[in-house]
Image 1 (cartoon, helix red, strand yellow):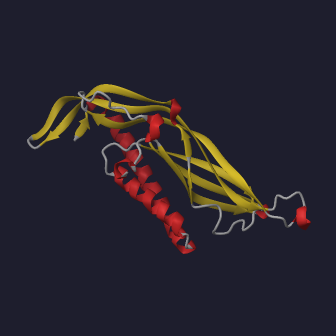
Image 2: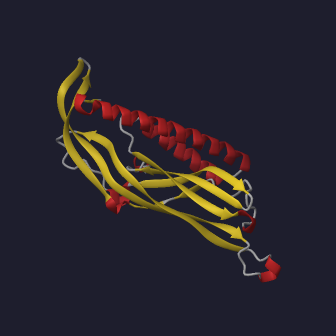
Image 3: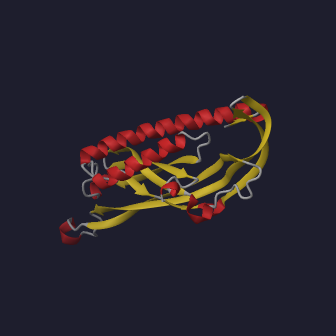
Length: 227
């Protein structure tokens, strides 16, 4: 186990505490969504949500959490959406497409203290591996709507896509490795980044429904070891 030395310890501890709190908050949100999904009887979405909660819990146990959060908001004209405001819409969970091309890996030798059976040893040099840059993302889903140009006396149903897109800034330590490791960086452009979004909250006012999604990016694929 590696511990940061004095020069970076305060910033590192503050960042770790903030990230730990964010993970706890997201886990609580996700647990609430799982409870609602159980009530809806949607077993497919429930299985996906429970799997993602397991991934969050697994990542949280690591000393470094290669996980980044964002939020995306969609507005709907509720009266033009079939079932607008109901429990069945919008979806509880959606897959997210990401573009990791603008992520870079920065490796910096740094001194840490290492825990050994005989106590802590100071002045051990390891590689601090950071992901820096930004991650563009996009997701969409379809809803049944009454956008029909008045067809069938305004009752025709058209299923149409609704989308959300954004950019997540990244400047985070994702791991510490031995200086003997010849290639400590993840290959971001070959399936290492895994993203999803789950429904955090829905607000309905008059003819407007606002859906708030929490977007979660794993900078190393949590399913990799299980494949």
